[in-house]
Amino acid sequence: MSRIEVLKTYKIYIAGQFPRTESGRFYIASNSKQQKLANVCLSSRKDFRDAVVAARSAFGGWSARSAFNRGQILYRIAEMLEGRKAQFIEELMKQDASKLAAEKEVNLCIDRLIYYSGWCDKFQQVYSAVNPVASSHFNFSVPEPTGVVAAIAPQNDSLIGLVSLIAPIIAGGNSCVVLASHTKPLCAVTFAEVLNSSDLPGGVVNILTGKVSELAPFFADHMDVNAAVYCETDRAIQQMIKEKASLNVKRVHIYDQVKWLTDGAQSPYYIMDFQEIKTTWHPIENIGGAKAGY
Image 1 (spheres, rainbow, N blue to C red):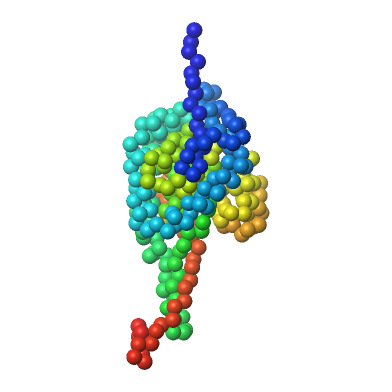
Image 2 (image 1 turned 90 degrees about the horizontal axis):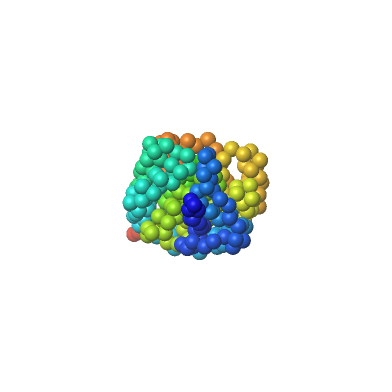
């Protein structure tokens, strides 16, 4: 008799831990050959709410870290991913990628993490400003993180899309809840294992698996989420997210035209999508009757 394979259960990632979904629901992921790949959690609204609580709790500490330290941690994530390249390549191949394409995608993910690690302590200088004003004040405009970002990752570019989405969000000091690809979830959960073994504090990144159609409304209308991202072309879902996001004036970004495997999918502008501009006025003190700085 042939042996029945025991499929691995890929759990969700919340607050630096790997719980099963609270509902107990799951689905079996398969590839184009109808081969069963794994048991995958079918996340619920409660899972999403728990993830938002974790992200909000982690935001204060993460945003307060030095930009240089955030860059170190992103670089560490790249190091950990480099050490597990073979596993990611194997999982991508199980999900219908050729070996050449899988190797290219994993290498690009590593390079993209390093790219954003380099921007962590540079984008503020590039995008901040000293503004000319007509009074005796210094006027500074500087970017600050938005807060908690709820993101629905690309469904076809399961690894590179996920990494390209998470990296600029956390590089800028935000925390996030990300819904991974429903049809190709393996690499997303394995990437959560990479995050967990790096220096990233628990709760900064939370990764769920499940159905976009079920969870998208909760991503859009949760009142403790500051920005929402959607990476697919479904116009009905795009419109729904924009309408529900207006309840607490979330920032909404639709990345439905991004080609994730190209250089155009990495830019400091993606960091700035999740920044608010804070402007500060400071009076110029008089020194010996003369205006300082003049």
